[in-house]
Image 1 (cartoon, helix red, strand yellow):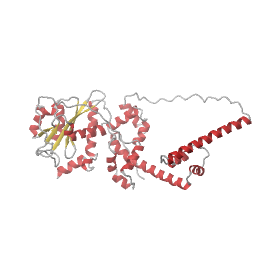
Image 2: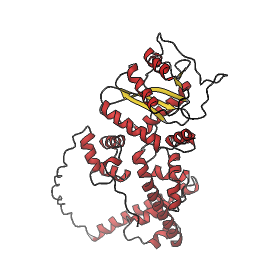
Image 3: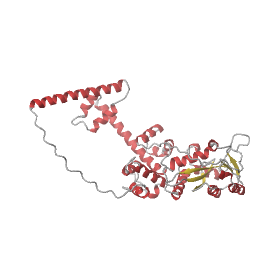
Image 4: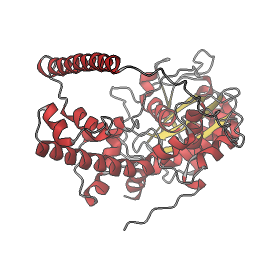
Length: 410
């Protein structure tokens, strides 16, 4: 029998904890429902997160006051036999009309709209809400055989068991990458599904996650961080199509840089990123509270510290004042970097950097951190998961770190 993997607090990222707490405080689910949906171990772990990170007052639950004793109904006046017969005849007439109405509705759904009611009928039979109704009689009412009913019931049970097994495989991945897409999930689950001898296609996985309410909902936000109206020198776009276009053929040839904002419960903080254009690996990052050039340059300094080769690197960015400033350009000169910039304020000319920003904020940084320190911790965890665990479609579902290391070692 397969042993259950025990998880500790370290197995859950800070961004995931804050996201779960936010969903619970919004009333989307209770803390017990959150534990069940995401497979979180521990009887009250989510409640502990709510008390630590939540905005509400999560005190110890008090015992609920019991309701008053059941109200005593006043005894009704006894009916005569003739009155009782008349009452029963009226009820029988209403039940016949009700039965005829629902039978007509089912016929219209089947004949005019092509809706199959067998599945829902089977669920109604198994619910046991109709007292004294046997399966044989229910099948006769619906117009199917008992054999057909039991075959469909077995298929439904097999499908439900498969869905539960798939969700159990998805949950550990979603603990680390809460907003990873279903297509990437399907690729990551390939080996696990083969070992479990389950045939689950992409569309089937979409259906299972939709039913379990685990599909990723898109998010949209915008905040301007680029000031391209300044006195500093602009550099030409070396990544633009033309005779002088620079096309990377390996890592550490082209780096793309960008700045994005991170909303917190207080004021905005900012995230500077430097990404390798070949491997899509984030090679430098820094979370800071202002848009000063010295702060932005910390991401580039991190990338330079981790650099392995000595060949010239093209540094591509927008025309923001931070990248054009003398302090930043001096770093270029000391390390032999070649500067490339967009032609203007056009985000499509720095699409790769914008895409990495979107992945981090859309898949990992799911909720607002409390302050700069908490934001820095969330970003560090998210960058590590992105580089080492998240498959990338453009890399044929390999991770950026694997592609980067393989290419550098050649």
